[in-house]
Amino acid sequence: MEIVNPLNENDIDPSLLEKIQFFKGPLGVIPSSVKTMSYHPKIADAFTDLNKAVMECKGKVTPEFKRLIGYVTSFASGCLYCQAHTILGAERFGSTEKILEENWDYANSSVFSTAEKVALHFASTAASVPNRVTEKEISQLKSYWNDSDIVEMMGVIALFGFLNRWNDSMGSALEDLPIEKGEKLEFKRNGLHFPSLLSFLGKRYFNFQHRFNSFYFFAPYSISKEGSLIEDRFTAIKKMITYNKKYLPNYMTLSSSLNLVKTND
Image (cartoon, rainbow, N blue to C red; front, side, top):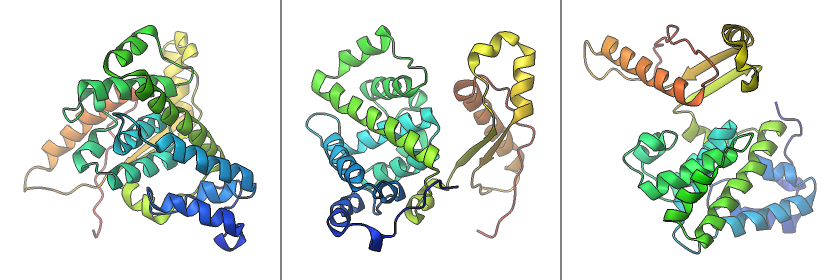
């Protein structure tokens, strides 16, 4: 639920409304978050200028790759609103379906170069709380990217650090266009996340996590051939287990509740 409803465009100062039309270029819509910022025009105005500056490309970092960095940053922070926006933005700047599907699992993907994997890993560690950037990440990053490129990428990571907290806390509602792109795969967690520093409790820690949390995965599925359903189900379970180990290390997420639901689509 949104804490503050976005302003209607008719209620936004005309000069500011003209300025924030800029977002229709990279996104196709004016984000509801920007409309909420417009309660204080100086915030919306400054944010628009910051967005333009951060997304301007001067070196090797392309507009598409900046959105992919934004996705990994938002994935690490858990902001679904920004994940949907960055998927949409990356697609508008040329990302293929395969790139978008494998962006979250960049380390094991064949579509990203070593330099890109290093940058995406840096984004993931920089977006983590607490920050997980070490000398190793810095050394790897500087091996493939010059100082100017690093500043550009760090600008994206920091920009989405602001946006992730704004949108997750404000409960920003997704617009129709990003929903169309983001509904291909939905992940949802309900409950309380106990910090990993309590993991010394061992089994009791996992029991607490499961008692206070629930997870939901929704993914479209089509049966490719007769008799493939069981095989595909186990393949899906295997992928989910790999995902759990990598991205939910403090949870022993069960996969036995995986169900297939027939729809009219």
